[in-house]
Image (cartoon, rainbow, N blue to C red):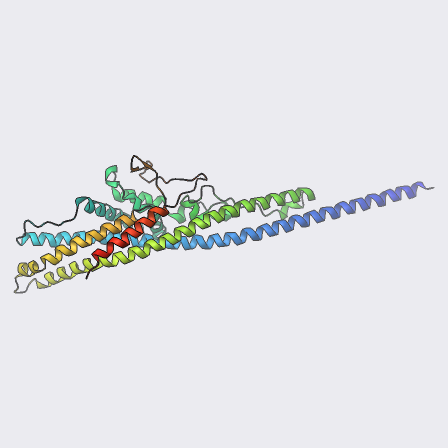
Length: 366
């Protein structure tokens, strides 16, 4: 009877159909795997590039912050020595002695010095580099108008350094959806979420078409993530470049400042060495009176240039009626673009660097 043969043919046809569906499913799973592998490679390459740029920017900001903090401390030491020598000159008969340094300039330098010393006193151990980097981003701005806020300058600086400790508030690694220091400084408005690339484990629990759909979704996520990493990486690269330029300019001008500071130190050492000897110390000190005044005036002039450059924000700050907008803790609020990213203050930095270089030349010690 033909019926068994018909049944057998049907079974064979069904088996062939099933084999084809199985093969189609295999092909779609293979295509899904290839899409995911390609996306993973693209993401890994871009993430590696970003991670390298992130480390370079972190290092540049930390180095800049360390220098800025060191400069601030030197201002405090300079003032202490300058005041001591001026007091000695006044005690020795120069009662009408005046230093031609505007009070506003002195206040600006002192404000910055206090903020730097405050951070140095609280930034210790493993967090010091992060605090230095944070100070480079926020700390200098903290000195702007700090005296008018009624809050201790060192306290404000400490808040800024704490809030901007990039390693601490970066939001975690990219693998967990964070954005390293880019997220910590809000350079990029939206955090880069790690794409869902590990589909191999569950893809085969789905139909081949579903696996392919999921793979394509992951591919689109990678496109979005790499675009954000590109934007963040470029911003970090620009920040690194400006950090290095500012550091070079500060180093050069600080060298001039230290020449005058060293002159005061040498005079003070000379006077101290005379104590206990049969020498008219007042007369010897008086011989250096003009040199002391010259060193103090030029030292403060250079300190003001350094302060102006340091307190020029790396990112644009929000202003209202000419005043920096601050939050409840006194931390400056930054301007954001349409994507919520901070805006590099490139024009302001270019102008501040050029001005500092041009004006520092007239105070170069002979």
